[in-house]
Image (cartoon, rainbow, N blue to C red; front, top):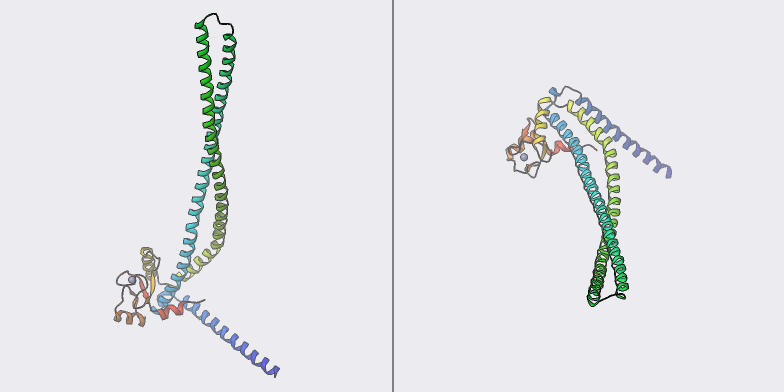
Length: 285
Ligand SMILES: [Zn+2]
């Protein structure tokens, strides 16, 4: 019993193998077709090749888009980091200035206190009321000077406190942005190195495929593709409409496209139209 089951399995595996080989054979046949002179190809084959080329080019476009946004993100972060560094540098400069000003005020206080002490000593040896009044006024004036300097120091201390908070905040922001930047840079590097090989492979495949497309058809396809916003030069019919611009396609035209006897373009956008069934055959993976 067990043996019989095994036998069945083997047959099935064999069958699967045969199917695989068959697929391979088809593929080989197809590449043989490709190596024929492009001018000798039927319209059907031309359309099929062109659609295959379109798929390769779309893949390349996708890679470009993927990479196209990341460098900008990295640039933005680099700008932000540079901006924060400049801001922090300026804050430190302001801080130094405030320190100098506070130091000057302290010197003023010391000087005024020294003068007050000197005048008070002189006060003990005054000869008349005029001298007494004059010295008293001086002492009062220097006392006010000390008060004013102390008030300024208090104000600057408040500014220093705010500045310190700002510096701390900016330092945290800078640290975060630097981490973001490092991650984005790594991501970009990864994508670039990863997609580089992929893109080169796709380009090589596209180059090989282009040889199998009649030059005039290829040229007009490239021209259409260039003018199309989504990079599509050949599209399938979707729900009775052009797959590129979505404008309706008349039934007779749809029939002509299905017959695959001539190259038909969308009357609205100029894209080459292909029967979905034919395009489906072209999808291999
Ligand atoms: Zn169209």
